[in-house]
Length: 251
Image (tube, rainbow, N blue to C red):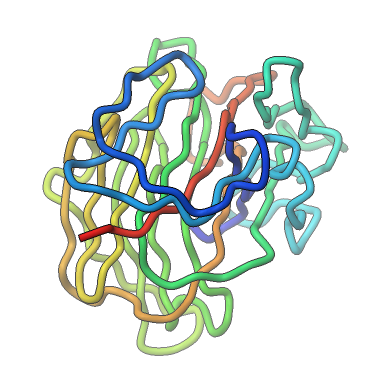
């Protein structure tokens, strides 16, 4: 991603979100489902929508050469159904606005999941440019980026970024790279281990990358904006986030 983003981490677990063991036999519901890959997992951190809304905003307020947006706190809302939403509106003479939230804490390795609703475009595909990803902002992309969910031109596509020096980007992509075009509620996740990143949608494996995988700690980012190269950008439109959770494998 790394052009402009909204980071949000969330957890629909009430209380302190202390570590606990979770088996993979969870039952999906509309908003609250955890859908983990096979194995046993220890929950190490979870964020509610209210906690996500307090994440740090985008480090810049205006659009760049890719986004049609001016990121603003007013586009981030916590609903009575415990969903965090990021909405695109027309803003300050620009066609779109949006939001970027990023976690204050950086972590290395683990399973990262978020339950996200992707709205529909006029063509029935995924609207605009939603993203859920990990990055290390120091000398980006030298220290890495993992795009857990990033949709452009109506499809969710999976990749990592790396680089030999600051602002020189290289990519490794899953095969196939773009795996989803239907809007709706999904649980998106990656399992990041030394030398490998594995992607999952609703607990189903959808791709692997095992080259140029980052080893530095990363922050979590969630964003919703619009892409200059997309013809059917839609405003207003709302991406909704039920929670973000981080797990460790329990062998």
